[in-house]
Image (cartoon, rainbow, N blue to C red; front, side):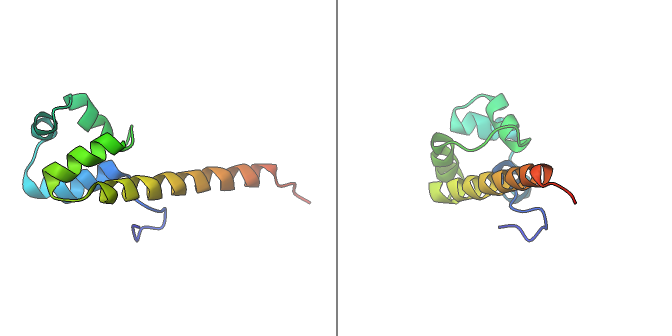
Length: 97
């Protein structure tokens, strides 16, 4: 979990900041290595989609991590996002005196 106050980071943010940028790997190069369209990697890095089990497997093999690492990031992000939505919904329904 990120130390930032708004919760865990999106897996795409982790991918960009901890793997691609430090290693000088472009999104295009990663897409080619994984055998996926550039748009797939770009959408992940931009936070527009999550990590599937298939993508977790591919990332783990390419970046010397584990599929669980990527799935844990996705789970933590998704749960935090859902908690924020639930909290906002409860605040909206709470009557004021």
